[in-house]
Image 1 (tube, one colour):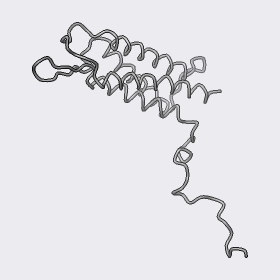
Image 2 (cartoon, helix red, strand yellow; image 1 turned 90 degrees about the vertical axis):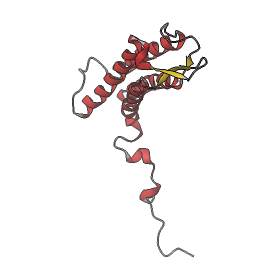
Image 3 (tube, rainbow, N blue to C red; image 1 turned 180 degrees about the vertical axis):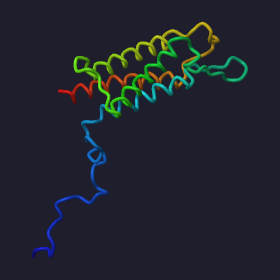
Length: 157
């Protein structure tokens, strides 16, 4: 027995893959990840990088107050957002400078800055302080920037 109407060849709109519905599909993931991880990297400098308590209340030191390296992590995140915004407005880097290489270099720089602060707690922070959640978020965001640069490099090939 044959059905009265043929099987529909397309899935209904609510069952489609959400990544394929976005402009560029899965292959534009590097650009989105660059902007998102740059934003998280920038915001992570306002999260608690060090926290601890001696006998009084618990204190937290945000990344911005950890010295020049905390501020440089913020600047790297701002540069990544600026790079993504410039691309959206139609400005591109010269062909001799691959954008993926710039993203990988900025991600590596941010990773080095965060690792320095992860290994070496500044002297201005009281001794019982340990690492807070913000520094780990910064580390993950800086590694995500490197992954985004690698994804962009694969898109350029």
